[in-house]
Length: 485
Image 1 (tube, rainbow, N blue to C red):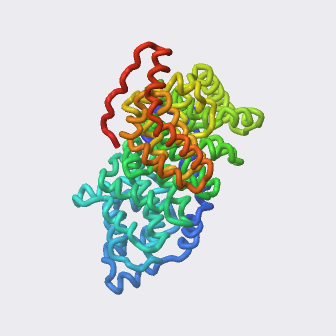
Image 2 (image 1 turned 45 degrees about the vertical axis):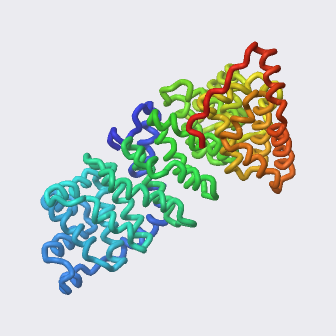
Image 3 (image 1 turned 135 degrees about the vertical axis):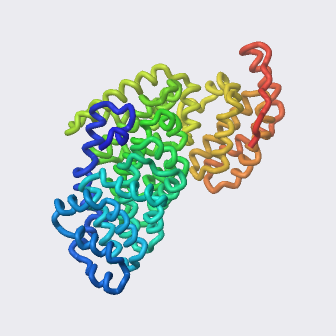
């Protein structure tokens, strides 16, 4: 692997881990995939190039090259490529552009893939030819992604990943976005038999920093999490979490990652995981989410989120087990220390803010009258950020527990903050709570009813002012609401 493919900032142990997952070892793992099994069969079905030449479907030059190249002797192929690099690219691209029979195209793609696998510097053959002819190196391959045959599209995707990752010249943005969007869409295909091959392409691509941002821009993180939330086997689980892991080596992406609720998702998988490789890669993601952000406040928020998702409890269980990989024990120890430290420094408001941002509300200790007496006014901070999230949850959540707790919190805010009723009305919360009066779940209806009563009672404002005077003298006015949504 070239140094550009190892995530920046990776320690030597991690570099060794990523390198060990590349080249021959990863291809031994990939040999169990449908794509590789089919490729093994297709290699035995040699093409009659003479018939293509006689029927004038290929030129004499292309026929001469491909018959000399399509031999079992790798040394002979290597010698040919040293003397005829330009003809190699021309012949392969001509064949991809002019041959229509699926079976022959499959065979041609395997020849190209095997050629690159034998020596990764050969990807430059296509770049040199494209530069000489002033044509796109990507066009002929990207066009094949529109074919109906699954083997053709996925073997093409594999070749594109190798050229994009092993060449000196990076993939251009428009072509890159098209390719990454195609990979993302393939992840969403129901019962896609080639999903391991798609995952393998992403594992390669996302080691390169500029490709990471392009993947995020096509909604890649949400797609990874969406697939992980469904029923996938542990190998696919591992591959997709590996993709999240390499993304977190970029400090900016590590800071943004939990906006997609990565921590709750992975915490759930960790609690159910029975495979050491899945456990190991989740712990590695968690470690990066603490170590990589440059903003220490974000690292602290990630720690709190992990605590709230019961990761500490899971770490206690993991500590009792023996692992073949010493990195697992090291990560368990690191995470345990960081999470325990964050618990000691945790204020009840920090805990509440993290719970709200996670979207996973439950009847935790912060949902008590004492908390609201002390902290109601703090929900006005950052342009009512937490209140806006609560209102959004009332509008979008399908979880009865979340709706119940959010309704309760809205009511308590109104009860303990003098202008709370006005603020909630401005944010659209009152209407949403009233709609929940007709909810099918009795607990939601009950909490919504209590919240509506608090919204309707006019003397809360007077009582709230009295309460605030008792606590801190004259009450502060609420800041104006900007960017009302």
